Image (cartoon, rainbow, N blue to C red; front, side, top):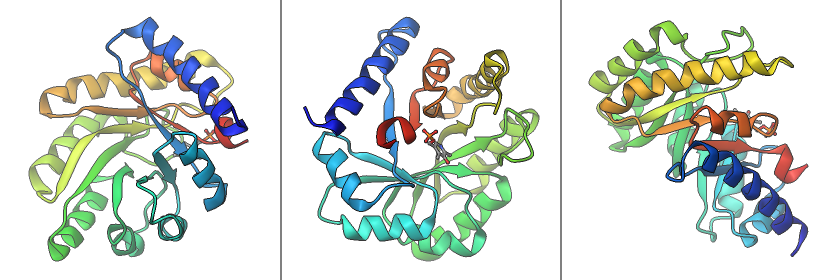
Length: 223
Ligand SMILES: *Cc1c(COP(=O)(O)O)cnc(C)c1O
């Protein structure tokens, strides 16, 4: 096994342990966050079996997807989306936008989609940790915002929620922020929500134990 296969293997082993504690039926999708590595490293991880990659800058996603256009990769956008970058992002074949941080941003995306005759998959980001440094809707209004996007943004496929765990050494607070997100996700399942994207290198096992079914891992895979 090469180093990339070993790192993926180690991650899958931990995911497997965490998910089977929740349920045998809990299937977890791994998004490898490639924001701090080159296209070459993405290719090496692809060769090790990984297909889904996440970027937090539109420019960088466009650059890598172009450089690697011959590979059947799935690109996820996980960063803050400025309104003046929406068109550039939609011109890429983006598989899922995790970071829609408000109804008004969703409206903007929807408008551009309408003009392009396209649809796109989106998650609503929730700021469950209520930290100023994080974006997303506040948990108290998340349900309402989600339903508003569902009813008013016809070109958006709204598939669930995304959240970042609290930036805390206190595991209990991190856990509470994940639980808050999961609770919202659960209540939205009847409205079609199927993806709960939470968990990064430092907290993905905890996130899975709280119900996450999509983790976004960068440093633990790429160092
Ligand atoms: C960078 C980033 C990640 C990955 O973080 P690691 O700690 O390197 O695993 C996940 N999600 C978002 C939104 C990020 O910006």
